[in-house]
Image (tube, rainbow, N blue to C red; front, side):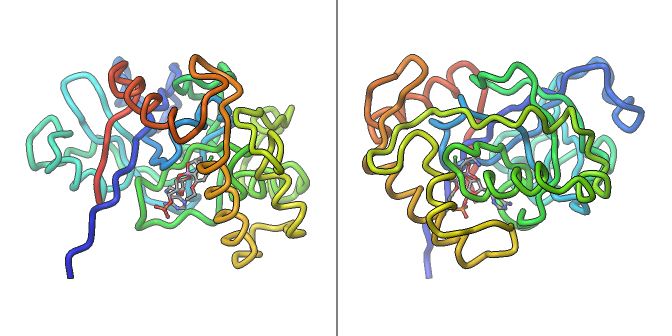
Length: 253
Ligand code: A2H
């Protein structure tokens, strides 16, 4: 049975030098965590980046100067999608675990926050997308709940090696107004469904569906150059803008 491939926008989140010891071999190169998203229009509201703590990652050579940190599975796919220095052959420069990435400071495209940090999320699926997810708690219930867990639970932060200054001050940044749901739709839906932990996966799936559909159907951008226009209309425009500025690339799987 033929299935349409899923198109993801990979957001190039640049690692701000100086690099930590584990990344020393990359000195002088442009290194990006490549986050797979279906909602490029939300990226103004990025507050952090998510990785899986025990996930296996690596910086793979995209061209002479640039590396993407992601999973080997995706690097192989990208190598067949013209995104590898050596065509059809991924080159990993050093093997990394999610734990090696925690706390890295990033500069991410269009984000109002100048610097955002890499934090752990347990609900990341290792075999979907790049294993790197950008966090937009205003519009993503998963992101909102995972962040709230870090904010609420100091023992959890300590156990994951997360410093307070990577999480605080915790501020949801409104980017889309969804009539009936407000400017922080993910927070409202999580509150309405009484979700208070990342383990409530069924409720989270429901919340995700509601925010995703409502945000797309009824959402109005309230920030950026396409402010006051419908999300439906603006989504392809922001995607094009990101691709043209080389802030993102397309990836299919
Ligand atoms: B979305 P689909 Cl604001 N594991 O981006 C878990 N989740 C992953 C993932 C992985 N390996 N790779 C990507 N994702 C997330 C923004 C966003 C997203 C918003 C609202 C909803 C939303 C900011 N996070 O997704 O299963 C990424 O989060 C709801 C569908 O391939 C990506 O888009 O359909 C989305 O899930 C891809 O989900």
